[in-house]
Structure formats: C-alpha cells, structure tokens
Amino acid sequence: QVQLVESGGGLVQAGGSLRLSCAASGRTFSSYVMGWFRQAPGKEREFVAAIDWRSGGSTVYADSVKGRFTISRDNAKNTAYLQMNSLKPEDTAVYFCNAGPVLETSAQYINYWGQGTQVTVSS
Image 1 (cartoon, rainbow, N blue to C red):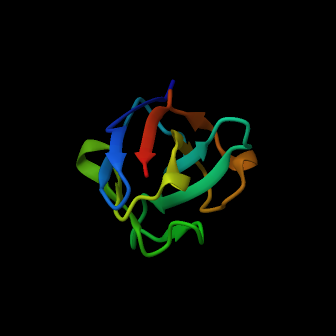
Image 2 (spheres, rainbow, N blue to C red; image 1 turned 90 degrees about the vertical axis):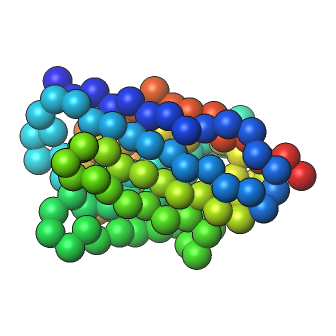
C-alpha cells in the first residue's frame, strides 16, 4: 500500500553536491523511519542515513558520510531529503529510499523500498 518515489540522482564532479528526494504515498503503517541505502556494482547494499518521522526527528548516519550528508524531512509532504555535499567517487552507487519501523542500520528492519536513483561522482 505504501509507495516510495525517489528522485534527484545524477552525475556530479568530486566535491560537488546533490539532493535526493523520497516521497511516500499511502499509509505507512507505523513505518516511522525513512532513509537511504546504497549499492555500488559488485557490492552489498550499504546503509547511508535515516530519520524518524516522530517528534524530535532523530537521525543516524553511516560513518562514511557523517559530516557530508544531511537527512531531513517535510512531514506535510511525506517527503525525506538527503543533501549530499563534498561528494567523493566512492559515493557512486544506486541510492534506494526506504521506510521501516525503527531507527536502525540493518536492512532486515525495512518494510518498503523505492525504485532507486543513480548517483555518479567523477574524479
């Protein structure tokens, strides 16, 4: 019943910025947390960042992106945003928006996945 539609990927030079969006439609059924995983070719899916929809908007980040990426939300639009600054070639991957019930970094807790958007960072 929940659909996640993400956008904002593209090609950027190292040191540049991109902003990803993830819009949720339908009832979330206690999937209070939204965020992103990413997957590079030949690599396993990797946690990036997440935010809780509830009061306070608690966030968690992977160590690899902490200080460079910022996740935020617009509750009225049911949309999460991932601002990615100081991008590195190592950030190149397909980024998958997701929603789940708890603020955790393991994919086993994810209930819904977006279609993915490609982020490519050139050196």
